[in-house]
Structures are given as structure tokens and as C-alpha cells.
Length: 92
Image (cartoon, rainbow, N blue to C red; front, side, top):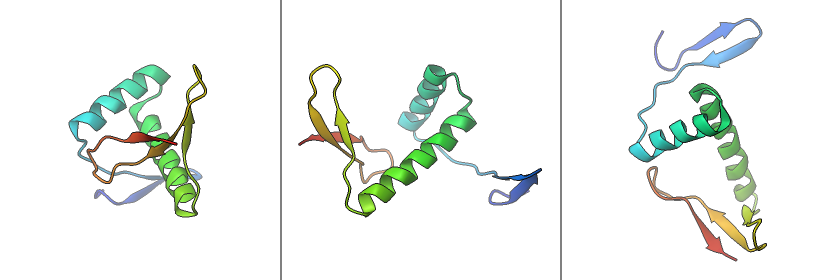
């Protein structure tokens, strides 16, 4: 099977891909899997769904906001343009 092939297992359809993770992404994957007790596959699946949702919301003019529990400060989350860049928060 090549890298973009789709394989069927019952009613679900799976797509197998190979990716090269930058060091920061690899550490993030390890940390997230450890914190959530999920497999790396589950973490990547959830991350892609979340990323698509956030990109869609921004594409229609909405903002992604983070409210700090300790003091109620609200910041706008901004994705980096670089694949290995630092995501960040902009104060609102």
C-alpha cells in the first residue's frame, strides 16, 4: 500500500499517511499522548479535527480566545505561519 492509499476495515475508512515531525511537534505528540493516556494515532486524529475546526472558525471571521482561569484575562490565540513556529497568544 502506498502512502496515500485508503484501506477499508468494516464500515470505517482509514487513510494511512507518513509524516516527518519537527522536534517540537514530536515532543508535543509525546506529551499529549502521556497527558491524555491516548495513543499517538488518537492524538493526531483529534489534533487534525481541532485544527480544521479552528481554521474554519477563523476563516469565517471568528477569533479563538483563551481565558485564563486564575484571573479571567482573555487573549487571542494566533497560529504561526511557520510549520515549526511557536503558536502564541495576543493580548486582547
